[in-house]
Image (tube, rainbow, N blue to C red; front, side, top):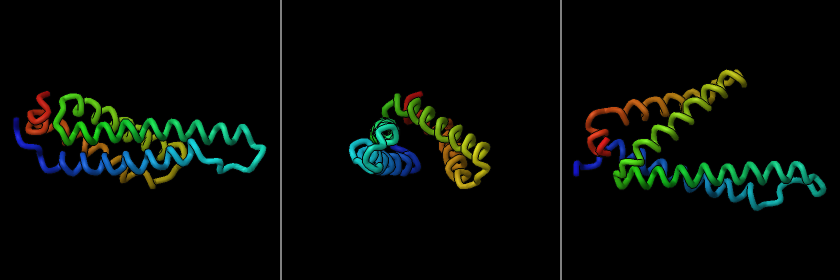
Length: 126
């Protein structure tokens, strides 16, 4: 097995950390009562957002671990995860006319490009 490329190590560590933070944020939203009493619809929306955030955090954590271990599926999951991140960032830029997600989009595109480098594809046996 080829040795893990340095940037894959860095991406994996960042994905694991982001996954853990996202899981914590999702748990806060899913299980905390942070809306004024009597606002059941708002509370339901917050909890739903929390569950979605938990799922995204779990997926990100799994991708990070899979990238670290060099599993072939990680290559595909990484493309999906960073592809979704790029598309959502672009949508956010267009709809909100905000340029704050530009860095996130650039990083996602760079990671996608890097995943297609020959030595990275060789590492993941793709």
